[in-house]
Length: 175
Image 1: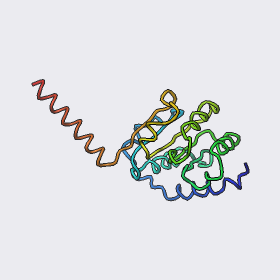
Image 2: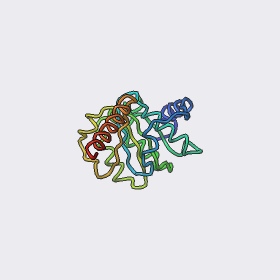
Image 3: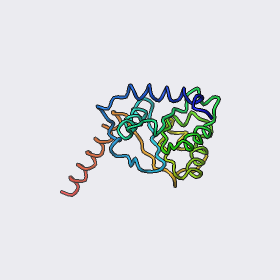
Image 4: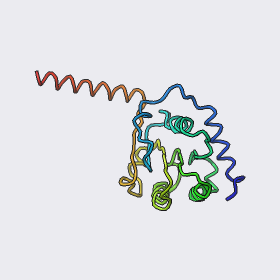
């Protein structure tokens, strides 16, 4: 695979980076162990998963072409297999991939397992907004990955309030 074939992916990647705001980060950003080899981030559409990936790239790579972001719902993947991109990246020294919307790619879980098993130097951070598909993947990735859930602001507030109510209930019982 030649770089010219990959140009549409790189163009999309750089356009998204150029529009990424670093001033605000989701609560989950600081809780992720970004050093893990296979990280999954799941959550509803529109909660900030893509922005979080792009923020991490901007804050951790002086040369953003030392890593690669690709959304697997990109039309490029209609005519190019993911594993060809992975092999190209590996041959060019790119050892960290940010894969967005993995649930849009057929047999995504098998591909992630194969990347993990066959490219031991490579790290993958991926997102999915289809929680059901991610939870019922064809391949068991549980021993290989660390999964985080990014909730919407409303869900995060509700979760925090529920924890506070439980703490207060425990305090009342102890008194």
